[in-house]
Length: 378
Image 1: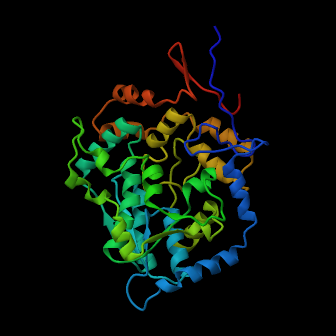
Image 2: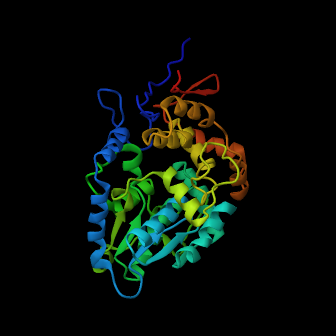
Image 3: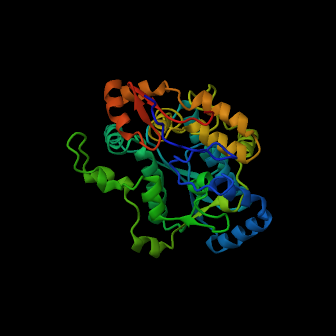
């Protein structure tokens, strides 16, 4: 009997599958919306965009105090954002970090150096480890994403701090869903919204959805760090979140080299299990590992696909090289899965009993106990 494997197809230019967690559409030539929107970067006058941003920030300048807030993790993007805001825009930022207890040692070193390197104040908010362990287990059971707390924390604490200190201007890096999947045009100049935070960063869940679970009970007072500012507070402060990626020709490879050369930023000293890059996600030991493994389990692709697509679009890699990266890395079981299971005090049987329930039937089929999917090289 022949087993019918779901008909996933792949972008003709990059290596994204139609099963992408970030919504894609494909044109008549089989090219995905992420690639098409990326092409718009070649049409834009980036000097003009910088002038537009300088004009935008002018009303926010003041003689003393913080002029903006930047959410930082200590990664290459955080360094570049802070460099861009201080050097190109000439603003005085307050740095804000959500610490979800996932940092790699090198990532923590990079983070703690930022205050002195950029001569800025830096606030770090960290929920209790006991709460984070419960949230890891609960979100994994709810949505197959143990890192929900990190997405929630980044999206909430930065904007909450801006309101607390009456700082109306917040800077973010690139709009992730536009960069990956072409959610918006590069001409839309979208800004950060509460809806983007909830629907995309937080997978459609909010802090109150974490309350009332019998297995991993969480109290309302434990989630105060995750409460987004009210509409009244947003309007009172005039809060807005501006994406630097709308005003800069964003290139992670070039940015990484800049922050290494100028600030001594450290990439990972050892390779990751599931991707070839060493300069991404050092603030979160699971983002390139166990968390990304769950994306592969759910949608059939992983971090090597994400990174290859970015590098193909920016001309750092051919599609054939990207396919080889996907073949080499996307399926690999990461070693930090064992670290995470020890952290949450569970075993691998428990993990697979939950993880397999999140496999998309649009991607996976099971045959004699084996999970099968269509690959880009098939």
